[in-house]
Image (cartoon, rainbow, N blue to C red; front, side, top):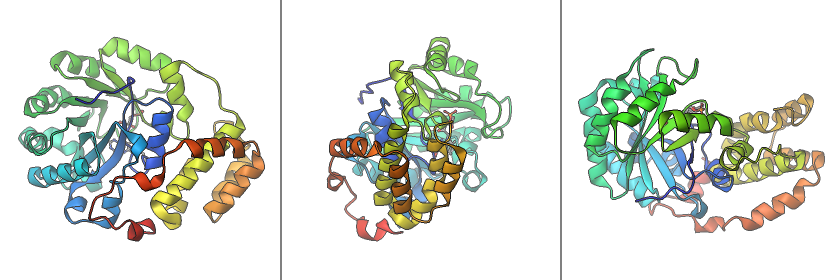
Length: 342
Ligand SMILES: Cc1cc2nc3c(=O)[nH]c(=O)nc-3n(C[C@H](O)[C@H](O)[C@H](O)COP(=O)(O)O)c2cc1C
């Protein structure tokens, strides 16, 4: 049994859900955070970059680590590894619409192959002693209702919760999430259902919870460069952050991400975050453009401190409250020093 302290879950997002994002999400009120999808084949082959996704901070719990793949046995082994790394929940991805993933028979394609989907959930549930959850889309084609057929079967096979993002795989992120399907799914299963898609405010979260009977909402894009949205959804605290607060959170995010990914990878990875944090009318557009073009993360930090000197005090406070990074739980086999720059 994993207790989730609030009804807000931070979404798994590939290329976004690094440790810094998840830890920040917890600080701003997410009751559960999730890793981005981790390849079970990558884990099987002890791929260094894949193993890097299993770095878990002491202050992240409860944490779900999401795995994707198409072979039940390989998924079961991957599940054992992510639990050994510290996951409180193993989440299975039956939602990814990206061709690179679906062409391997993983992600959303499994919504079209119920026997295999059942076998995967069954094998994973039998392999670990933590709850197993599944995240899925409504189906492959527009208008599909496959999730309503597949969802109950996955619960029968051992899923302890289901998350539904009610767009089709074909839709990718266009159109709207149709949460009338979420309501139908809730009525069909006796496990908690989490509603994902287009939750950006407390009003929207409350409307979805009320109209669907979902146990929680999941927030993805709304939290990109905007942890304050989580606070608004959980507490109703709609204060806009000051420039100093924005700069401070971004500086902390940069520092943590460099520590996690190494300067080389973090440099490119962080560019999109600069736009997300500094946009939304918070800083003048030319400033944002200037920051994106800086070569190193050190230059970015210097520039942010210069633009918002009051950020220094906030950063210092935030850093003093974070646990020592040396406390991370690591896989025995993981060579952290090699990973750092990889
Ligand atoms: C950049 C990006 C990456 C994503 N990566 C994943 C992923 O790795 N696993 C997953 O289950 N969903 C992934 N999603 C889907 C989100 O978890 C979420 O279901 C979807 O974005 C709808 O929620 P939102 O409207 O709050 O963003 C991703 C979404 C985005 C925008």
